[in-house]
Length: 166
Image 1 (cartoon, rainbow, N blue to C red):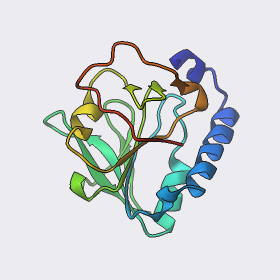
Image 2 (image 1 turned 135 degrees about the vertical axis):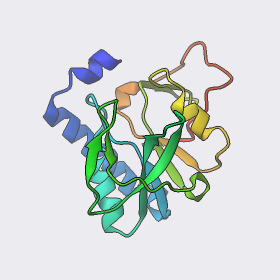
Image 3 (image 1 turned 120 degrees about the horizontal axis):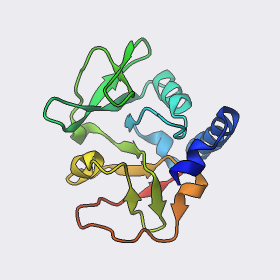
C-alpha cells in the first residue's frame, strides 16, 4: 500500500486530493466548526486545500502535534501560522497553542490502509488510537480509494474505528 502511494506522481496526488476535497464540499461535513486535519507527508493525500478552505471560511483548524509526553494533541493553526518541521518531518506551528480535544467536531485521520468497517492501519506508533479512544466526534479517513480494502486482518481491541470516508 505504501509502495503504491509512493509511486504516485505529484500531479496524481494533486488530482486525487482535489477529488477528495470535492467529496468533502458535497458532504454534510462542511457544517461543523472545529476540525483537526493532519499535515501530509510521503505522498499522503494533500490536505492543504482543505486547510485553506476551512481557514478561509472561518472554521477553527488544528493539526496533530506530538508533545513532550509523547502524546498526540491538537494545536491551533491560523491563516498566518508559521511552520517548522518536527522530528517526523511533518509541518507543525512554531507557536504551540493546544486545543481541547473535546471541542473538535471532525478529525481527519491519516493511515496506510482502511477497511470498509472503519478499521485502520496506521504507522504503528498508536498515537491516533490513544488520542481517539475517548472522543465522541466524527472521525473521517481522508484517503485514496485504493487505501480502502475489504478487511484488515488482526485488528487489535485498542484500534479505534473510523466513522466516515471521503
